[in-house]
Length: 296
Image (cartoon, rainbow, N blue to C red; front, top):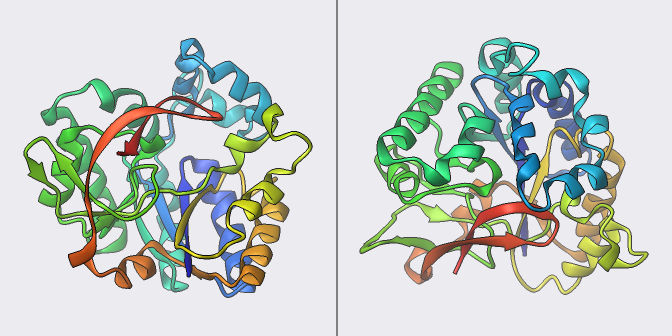
């Protein structure tokens, strides 16, 4: 069985400090992974307007957002101008590709996409995705094949745009296994590889887990090793303070018999003729605020 590692890189700090740490950990454990980069401005500070969303404050308190992201990052786009990640960090991004890791597009402006795409129209959505693809292509010299939506936030136009922009597969949703999204009367040709496991920030401080450590809980969920999984991690978390937890996960998954793969490695082993067509609905999951795109 394969366990694909999807690494979301949301911020300037995550790109500068977390990406190289994760690449080194993956190399030590002979793990492949997909690094999904935010390639435009870092406006993390503007996420504070989510304070009025149900569950947002509790998540901030549970996960110590300031400790993981740093004060400077939390002020980008408000009291501090948002630095352009793609312009400042293109050498880091290229180095990850040159080390043999798969790279893909996360977003142009991570916060702008995550906070707005659910309510925006087709023109806005396509413009944002095109800006991301153009910047990614400028950095890497070729267009991205894989897309992973910021915050698992999508709309119908975004699924259609993945076909139009030539994405071969994507991980924009949460769910149980690969599917092709049904969008109205149409079916997307872009294979969805949904995140199947909870993330560490969804598990930290959860009282309903009892005394169970988040790493132990994740390893319990994968103990049967009878199916493929996609695990999403973050350069700002597992690439920094939670790096020892990530190493424990990789060791545990190796012991359980998983091949630690990229999204591309997982996609290559799937017979697309047998992949089901599913609709996408929007709903909540434990430990994360707001609504997400869910396989249905």
